[in-house]
Image (cartoon, rainbow, N blue to C red; front, side):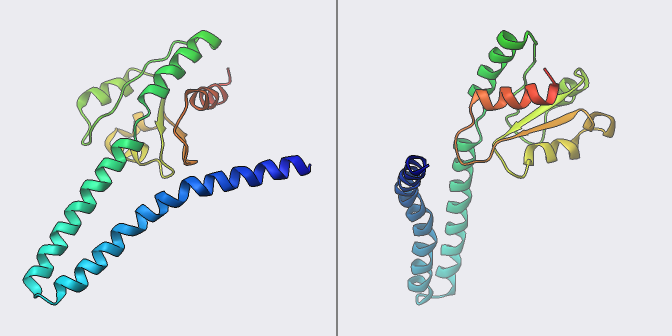
Length: 169
């Protein structure tokens, strides 16, 4: 038991070592904006308003880039489809959603299938929530969720195991 505890502690130290620079990066932007506001605030209200607009635009741009970087499940899904076919003999279909508002093809895709698994790297199931708002009520009941939000990149095996469990294969 002692060896396991030591390996857990070693892993905790490694995670902390990797997370510390990311934490510093996340903290630095608001601190820099606070310092900018204090300095520019002495120049006048017009200048402070300009800083506020620029800071918001920077925040939006940063948020979009993070979403694009973390929101990609395409490769894991494609590999999972191969696993499901090879290991369980089940053919599955796939549609990648790239934008909101949704195109009519998404409605057609949902209408042509019995069940739809919405795979997301998001604790709040935002994509599934948007689909529920957009789809007709008789189509919403087809939606099933596979969520992955433990901080690690999504992998095919996780998707496959969740799908197999939900399908009872």
